[in-house]
Amino acid sequence: MPRDRCVYIVDDDEAVRDSLAALLQSKAYRVWSFGTAAEFLAAASSLTVGCLIVDIRMPNMDGLELQQQLIARSLDFPLIVITGHGDVPLAVRAMKAGAVDFIEKPFASEAILSSLQAALSRLTASEEEDPVRAAAAAKLALLSPRELQVLKCLLAGLPNKSIAYDLEISPRTVEIHRARVMDKMGARSLSELIRLALAAGVQPGSH
Image 1 (cartoon, one colour):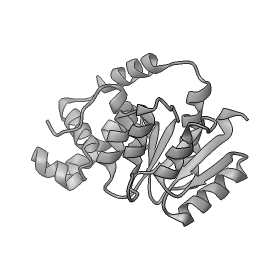
Image 2 (tube, one colour):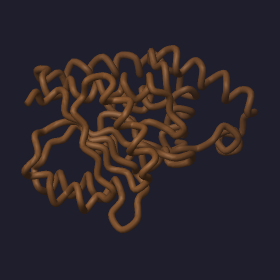
Image 3 (cartoon, one colour):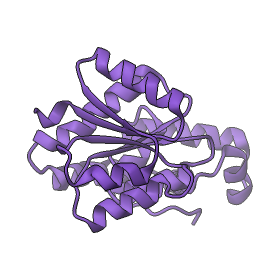
Image 4 (tube, one colour):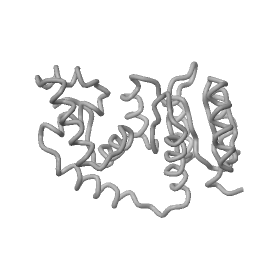
């Protein structure tokens, strides 16, 4: 079975599982769904390696705990986390631990499919971590000190108003800096910006 067509969905919301499965099956992916992280973990060692799409907030064992369990068992499933509003700090933790991407609810079909393609490319592509890191670092060098501060605040999951208060600037100024950061980093979404920032070694915070 081709590894780059296997997708595993782990979410305690049956409606989310069903809608995602229908979308991905319509694109010729082989899809398996699990209602709990423990259920997936119990089966993981016997599964063909594929992409794992997991909700970051679930009862008993959440997405972060599942990720750590997989790492501890040396099970390398490229991972995409699904997050709700306000979960950016958790998504950053997941990406620092190796997650490919995070998708915020409610998400568009195109976002899931694009992220899935990037995740599955890890199974077939040669190791490109160093070039990616070098390219991200080169983009990071284009930022002004203030823009770098704003970027660190975004990684910490702070909304614009909180960033403005923290840095003693206006919310409108934050919006301008944020737009410039996105442009200079070549990021089309917050998740892409965070992925680039982490690759360049940026740590969350306001200073």
